[in-house]
Image (cartoon, rainbow, N blue to C red; front, side, top):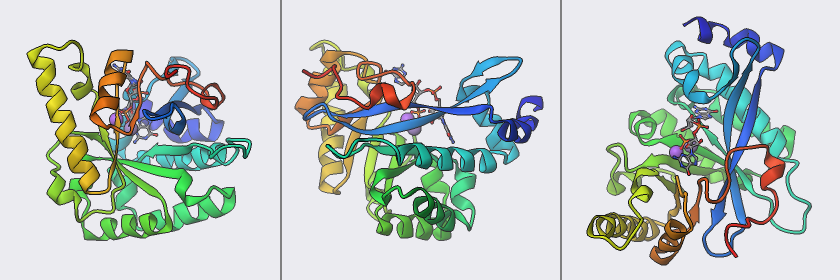
Length: 258
Ligand code: G
Ligand code: G
Ligand code: MN
Ligand code: NA
């Protein structure tokens, strides 16, 4: 817990930063959005990835101030993306369950959009299935207010939890991010791969029937991208399209789709 106890002082000293990973259109290669991924430039331990401190921050409740900083910084940076010649990408921000449960979330987001000038359509909030399932009625209402403003709501790591599509029907969700483990199997035309491909294909068609877009995560090869495109998947995120890094690196057209 020593590490998480250091979070408030680290926030004051400006030790956190955001990397971004592109969400790329499988139709035309455009960068549709970028997911903000927090890093901690720790003075003794070096650059820390989120798996080293996000879990602890969630256990101690310090994810609320840390996640608040991430949200504000992501909106501030995203407001400066693009040169007006093409639609600028949206920014996709991970929200922990404690952030969604806070009564002040709607006001916080509204205030950030007003102060930064970021249009609501250029902000996406990512919630995991378990966060979605565990949010009571009040937080769902807050998500609905945000969705009505135009903010995008995505379910992260879809397929790894217990969220079913019938349940999603009643939620203000706009996008499914399908967990990378379903993509890993899209390799060769083998029976095992065929099964994963059929699961993905039916997931995509069900999602589209519910007016949800689908982003596949963990896309590492051109072949996976080709198969996902053939299935009708809308967008992809993963090493094939770009590793997490500074936003400027991803603000031009993706070279992975020609
Ligand atoms: O960048 P990396 O692949 O190590 O990210 C690991 C996980 O940490 C991701 O799955 C992501 O969901 C989570 N994560 C990254 N940044 C944030 C953040 O700002 N808030 C929350 N709650 N989780 C984050
Ligand atoms: O929010 P989420 O936990 O999905 O964050 C994405 C995580 O997955 C990040 O930690 C990122 O570094 C990692 N990641 C991103 N692209 C790939 C990929 O193509 N393959 C694998 N194995 N991991 C990836
Ligand atoms: Mn995510
Ligand atoms: Na994810």
